[in-house]
Length: 163
Image 1: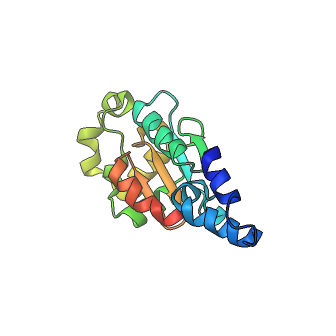
Image 2: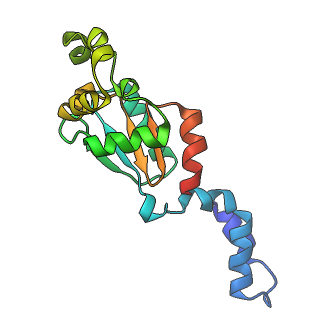
């Protein structure tokens, strides 16, 4: 907030109460204050990322610019569990096959493009949970929200609920 705005608030009629001045300040700066409000702790996002992934870097920058708090997990060291992956599937409607990082070296090296068609969902989830480098990223989970990959418009739409 600029010093000019602070002076304007202070220059209100001397009979104006402090609470009225404060209310006026809130009204004049509501957009700024909305950005600074902490998110509901029950819905603090958990973000699975890889430190060198450019898409993950974009997503984290986007979150930081919007003053979102989140718990960061290195997907290579703390990969999502089968239960977490099932939850992602349930919340996003994505099939297990869509949770694979199809552009990753490990996916290509294992020849998974041809193998996934013959695998059951449980087998896919077990494989995904065994190595975070197989998982499409970033994955954001918060309460009843899950996001896979970073699409700015989708994140904006879904995460507005957390404000």
